[in-house]
Image 1 (cartoon, rainbow, N blue to C red):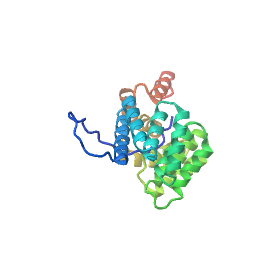
Image 2 (cartoon, one colour):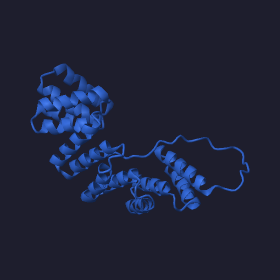
Image 3 (cartoon, helix red, strand yellow):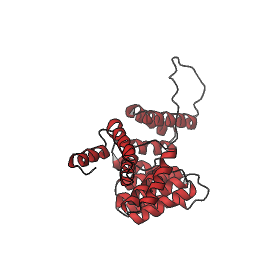
Image 4 (cartoon, one colour):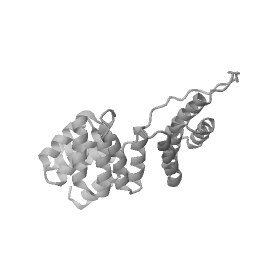
Length: 252
């Protein structure tokens, strides 16, 4: 399954205070934002109960905190409580309609739920904003979403557009390598693959593409090396299972 770009900031969690201090009147907006950021941090650590507790507090302190609703939507998306996720995305967007991170992540949610055309609309809100710094990610998300939908031409066009903005987009590079290999254009596929391995760590997907390309070129030692890496580092991946099946049949 192709993973799309989710954009959320990184938050460093601070240790809890061991003593209580009177700090005067509560700044509810600041308290809300601090709790929202703590909730995000706990969510990124996989501590979902703590995350929800902090995000509930954030919303209680400031019912107009778009970030808190955004992070709550992300939490529910990860918990696969999709109706609650959608409600919180909608609330976040109503409070911050120009926040492109929320638009992106709602687009990812829609794509994962199979609502492709609506997802593209939200990605294009980002693409059509020349001042937004992550436009390449939005193009890449269109490409990944198009792959899910089976629209290979749209996927290829979108990955190329992403690389025009940022030539070092690993997902776009490896997807273009696979797409061109599937079309029989091994030379161009190999070029994208070499660009990928120059900037990114090997993944099950990239090792699989590498095995196919290097095998076609007759580079047996490289193929053997990639096979060992794929089966050793990612034994439970779909690509490793596919490799073992082909090896058993004698086709690779």
